[in-house]
Image (cartoon, rainbow, N blue to C red; front, side, top):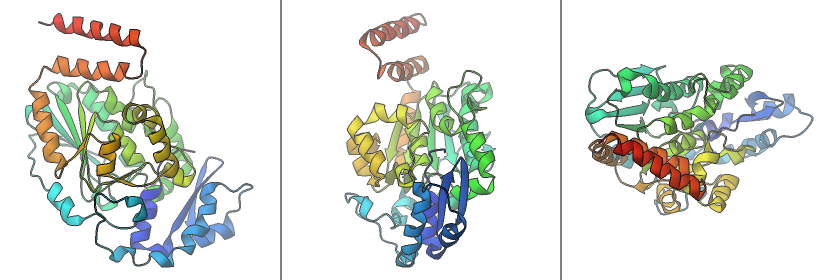
Length: 365
């Protein structure tokens, strides 16, 4: 079964309708969804996968969480947020961080009503996840739109001719809260899984390595320009893996971040095995993945998951993007290729790669 975070859907149900909590289970490659009480009556697999067992827990705690939607306070950014997962982010801080007025040039592109490509000045392009009413969670159109956006920025000359930097953010209260399990199930579980797992995906080309679920992360690494991710609100599961595909991540201090797949008996399989090894120690990656705990932006900065914490990630991203746009595009592209191809390579490969790329740059003088 596809390892994607189901927490976005469950959390939304906790806040909006805890008495109708859903339990999701994967069994023999088929996704089943039903009310927790009905699930135990009608769905009895030969074995007991972790997600099927979860239904009794969610039903038993539903009454205790009925008042979650009334909570408005946000935990201190320095707290361990794993003890207050049902609390909402501070709305005022999100408004402060994400009301930056950024005017695009002509040629804005909307993809499947989920992602917008907005050309800005100096070769900077803003990619906006635009499903705010669902916290930019990943349904099938969102998967397709993110991969499509990355593919178009890589291959469409009308978009990448003068492209220098990509800045990605999420509209509304969150960057991305992971899989929208309900919408994926309604789209047809078997059909959705087949589409997500097909390798290579339609967006990676004939020589592509990833499936669709992986390419929403991996294809950003294949762009020759830097990709800067702006995090705020929540960044869970699949949403975090999308963010890890960027070259830099700027986050609000109180952003809630988690690798949540282990909560559903799954693993992160959208490219995390590539991106995490470049950012954190192996023991840290194991601890975050095995526990699925939620950390703040401040802790994520401390361990290396985010580049730095700032009050206004979009403002910081635009500042850095403008600085990069003033540098040689060939040098910037070579820098990205150098570090991504050598970060976990042997020393001989690293030294040879440095020389090869440097000779190409010198030849352009």
